[in-house]
Length: 249
Image (tube, rainbow, N blue to C red; front, side, top):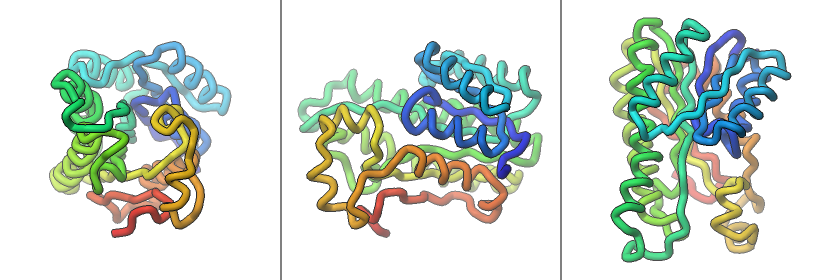
């Protein structure tokens, strides 16, 4: 039980990597607030967490809306009395083949959800964690944020690069208070989002992934659990690559 008794928030927690993370944290003893724009799916995942034996509440939340973010954080605090783990996982993607085809509205929406949402939630919990003198914030970056995006679009890549740089800034600011901040940079992981981008055809990716397969959401979730646990007690400001060897730095 690496996270026994800890209170966690998982944004975008109702599907894909977020759902797997919510359940993985619960299996390791954490209570989980499942936050997602899709309230019905959030309730389903929250029920699955409770079935594991942990406390859980679903909270419909738009991560790009500062008032909703603040209300959601205060509700978790009221329900559980503390916040130990924040997983900033909520994000969107878009199939765009050219920067010329990205509209201003596309750009603004992508950065509002993928980057601004991380900022808003981190800001909302950091005071709580500073008072506790402890906490773990784990942000979801992307390989595209390191190498640029083509299929996913330049605006997606830019948003994820911002997430990873913000992670380092936040880690430096919160380290004196015993709060750890890290990010994960996934490669190609099998989710509804990536199936939308590829049509379920992984052939082009398999040839450039040394391990020769697509990653699973459970593999990402295990890295989140590691970073949320005391096993990562001397790690902060780090970007963990989880990409099957597709990109090595």
